[in-house]
Length: 66
Image (cartoon, rainbow, N blue to C red; front, side, top):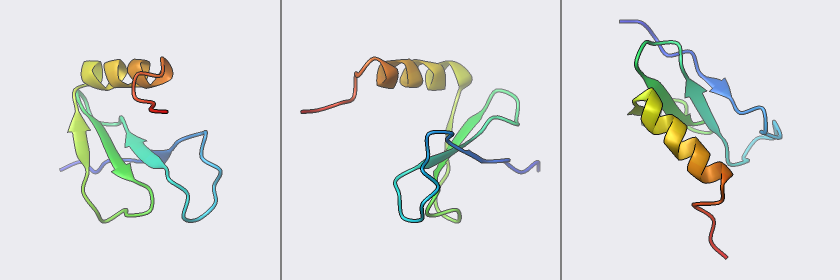
């Protein structure tokens, strides 16, 4: 089985303990996401279209609460 190659967000401050995700797009038809502070923890897998919709909703403020 091919391994995921995770990349940390370019928006990450790089400081330990900050909330950040890592994303892997190296496998066909799969976007894998994990918590950067827990590399051995769970990995969530999405279809690329679902991940793109999620990213768009976040960018448009669809998941922000005041």
